Length: 536
Image (cartoon, rainbow, N blue to C red; front, side, top):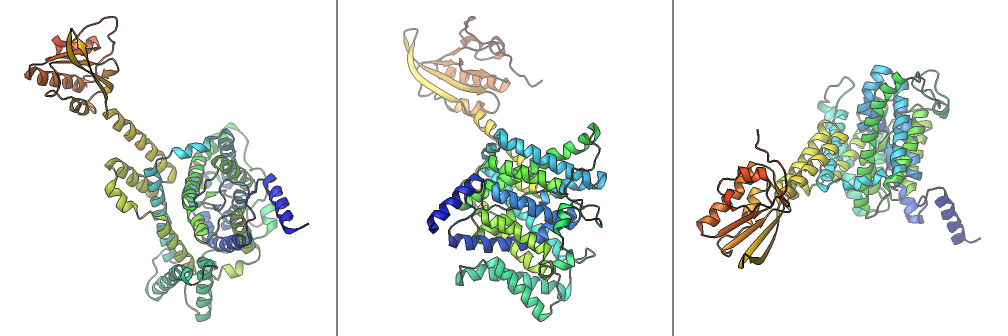
C-alpha cells in the first residue's frame, strides 16, 4: 500500500473518530508539534496560578489542563484553540471550595459539563454570532489587560512584597530578553517557534550564569503520577482519582451546586466561544460552535469525575499557539500530552524555567491580543459604540467575562432599539384632496420624545403645496412630546397660510392637541384607540 493510500485511510479513520485535521501535511505537523510544546510550558505556571486562585492543589489545575486540553483539541470545533484550567472559572470556584469543600467543586464541574453538552446538542452555540463587534473589541481588550495584570503577581516574592534591587532588575532584564528573542528570531529563522526558543535560551542562560531569579519550582512542585490521576493520592485529600463526587445526593446539595454550575457554564461557554470567534478572525477559517460546546462539556464531565477543576478555552495560550504556527488539532493534542509529560517525568526540568521567561512570553501575548486599532477606531465610531467598547473592557477587568459580555449585549441591544426608535420613515406622495392637489405624509414608526425632532425635520412647509395631509395610520403618538411636535408643525403651516389635515389619531391624542385640535379628520371606525403618556 503506497503512502497516499495510507494517508487517505488514516484521514477516513480520523474523520469517523471526529478528529478530522489531527494530522496535517509534514510541514504543518512539525509546526503543530513545536507550537504545542511551547504552549505546554506556558500552561504550567498558568494552571498552577489558577489552582491557587481556586484554593486547590496545583495538580488539580494541571491535570484539568491535560484532560480538557486533550479532549477539546481532539474532538472540539476549533482546531488550534487551547483549553485548560482558566482563571475566569477559578474566581467563581473559590467561594464553593472555601464554604463546602472540593467534592462540591467536582460536582459543579460535572454539572457544568452536562449543561455545556445540552447547549451543544440544542444548537445554542450559534448565538455567539449575535455578539456585536463593539462587545468583541471590549472583550479582547479587557482580556489583554487581565492577562497583563495577572503577570504582575510574578514580580512579588513569596511574602507578597514587590521585588526590589538586583532581583527586580534581573527579572526585568530576563523579561526583556525573552520578548526580544520572540520578536527578532522570526526575522532570521521562521522554522522554529520563537516562544519555545526564547524559553530554552533564557533557562540555559540563568542556569549557566547562576542568576538569582524566581523559577517555576519556586512557585510550586509540579510532579505527579498517573495513578494519582486515576486512583487518587492517599497523601492528598484533594486528589481522589476517578470517582463520583463524595457529597450527599439530596435537594440541598443540588441547591448548593446548581448556582455555581450555572455561572461556570455561562462564563466557560462564553469565553470559549468568543475565543473561537477571535481565532476564526485571525486564521480566516470558521469553527463549529456547537461541536465545541459538546466537546468542552464532555471534557468537563470527565475532568470533574477525575477530581480536577475543569476548564475552558484560554485566549492567551490560544494566541501563543496561533502565533507559533499551530493550526491543526495536533498542536492542542501535543500541548496536553507535553504537559502530562512534564507532570510525570520532566517536572525537574520545568521547575528550572525562570518565571521571567514565561512572563515575557505572556507580555508578547498581551501586546498581540490588545486591539491597538481600537484607539483610532474610537475616534471614528459613534459615541454609543465607543461607550460599549469601554464598558465591556472595564467590566471584564473589574468583574468577569460573563458580566461584561451580558452587559455589553444588553447595552448594544438598547442602543440599537433607541437609535431605530429615533428614526421615523416618511412616505411622501402627492394626491388629490377635496379636488385640490395635496401632499400626503405617512410616517412609519413611534412618535415620542426620542423621535420628535427627526419627525419634524422631514417636513418642508415652505416647499409644500397649500394643502398638506399627515396620515398617522402607521404611526403612534406615545407621549406629550409627540403631541407638541404636531402642534409645532401646525403653527408652521398656519403661519404660511397653508391647510394642514391630520388623520388616524386616537381620541386621547386629539384631546391633548392645542393648535391642531381643529385640523383633525375624525373617522370613528378607522381611528386607533391608545393612551398617551403624560409623564405623571
